[in-house]
Structure formats: C-alpha cells, structure tokens
Amino acid sequence: MAKLTDKQWLQVKAKYECGKGVTELSNMYETPKSTIFSKIKKEGWQQGEIAHFVQENANSLNTIANNSRTIAQNRTEIELQTIKEETLNIAGLKNKAQEIQNCMLDIIQFSAEQTKNILKNSPDGLYVSAESAQGTQYKRTTEFVKDLIPAMSAANTILGLDKSNVEITNNTQNNIIKKISNDPVQASRDYQDLIHGK
Image (cartoon, rainbow, N blue to C red):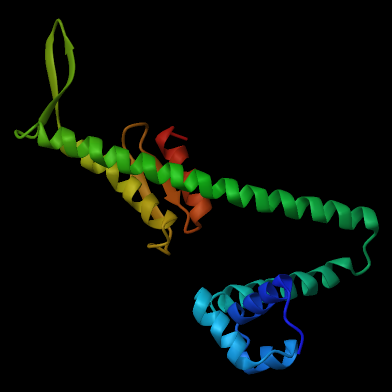
C-alpha cells in the first residue's frame, strides 16, 4: 500500500465529512483503517459534518437540471439565453429584497424605541404637537402607539410570524387603508408605501 499524498488526504477528509465511513475510505484508497482513524483523531475530523449541506446542494442541482430540461424544450438558443439572464436577475432581486427587509426591521425597531421614549417622558399622556401665538396644542401620546400597529403587523409578516393578510388603517393622511401582504418581500414594500402615505 502506497503512502497517501497530501492531496489524497484532503480528499479522504472531505469524503469523511460528507458522510463516508472509514471502511469505505480504506478500501477506496487502499489504506489501513487504523491509519485513517489515527488521522481522524489527530486532526479532529467530524464524520458527516457537512453531509446535510451537501445533500441540499445535490437536491438543488437535481432540481436545476430537471427544470433546465423542461425549459429547453422547443426553445431557441436566444430564448434560453434570455431566460438565463432573467433567472439571474430574479436571484439578484431576491438578495436585494433581503437587504430591504433587514433595513425595514431596523426602521420599525427604531420607531418603537422612539415611541417608548416619548411615552416615558410624558407621564401625563400628553405631548406638545404645536406652539403658536394662539397657544400650545397638545395631543395624546396614544397616537404614537396607534401608529405602531401597522409597523408591528409588517414586522410580523416580514419575519414570517403572521401568515394572513393584515388590513391596517393609517389615520394620519386621508384615512388610508393598506393591506399588508403575507409575502415577506411584498410586506416590506407595503410598509414603505404606508410610511410615505401611498
């Protein structure tokens, strides 16, 4: 039995982490099991450490292959190239959508903190909404809490905690009624529209 090269040992390690057993690797590389066990113990390999991820990738590749065969039927090279470009565009948009979702959650959290501070600093339940020569105008701090209700609905939908469509009313501008979608990406857009009164 020839001594394994560094490259072969890396291959053995990768296959072991993918879930292959020592006996199978011993037969595959014509190396004593005791030698492989010693290497495992010395370097702390974990059998099957990435098996789950490898299986997911394999399933994804199978799905891509099957979908590609279906898409390719009765289509020209120009059509296939266009479809490929559109697929890549959609994938890029999904990554962008995730960034938007994270940004929206930060905004919602910031709004909640602002409301908390206002309520904390207004124990009588009132705040100054305007000051003029005619005097000072007060409003109830509960308005801020009411404004947070659509934000909470949007946050729940973005996080996947609320699977039903939520209809909310923004009374600050012409009694706008806005339905928050149960799709996380669309929920982010709906809440942005609500903020801007669309």
